[in-house]
Image (cartoon, rainbow, N blue to C red; front, side, top):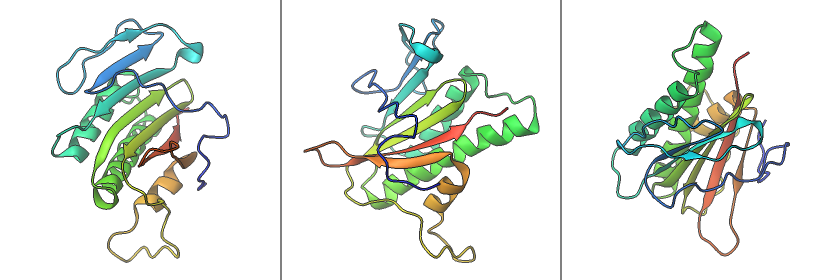
Length: 186
């Protein structure tokens, strides 16, 4: 499903920003925390309804942001128990998350001068990926989709893999946050 709703049908709203910069692994309801990709220790936060866990990665002055984002997401998936996957379905779900992360960060690089930050949120049913950038464009799958052509498949892939996706814009601030939600494996 493709949408430009600012939030998913559950209308949870945007995730809180745990730290102004750098990488952090904030595990709501989990006091263990986990190391972030840049070696900083994750901070534990007070519990929240549903045991929602949130991690944030800032791309300030970073190079190689797509592999950095994938590695960060992979570490979060390990910390949240999605990896190592016990079944083929769980492995496929984790790979889908990594692919969506890659596509959203790549789109920010190609169309918006690079991403500013990525936020990953997880509860028992959904993983939410948010990538913020300073771009003014409106992401959308190319139509008609032509599978044989090189390039232009990113948002089509996101649309096919995700439960929902959309764009949030803050009033009076340049840029946007593209979000996508994927279902947890059964």
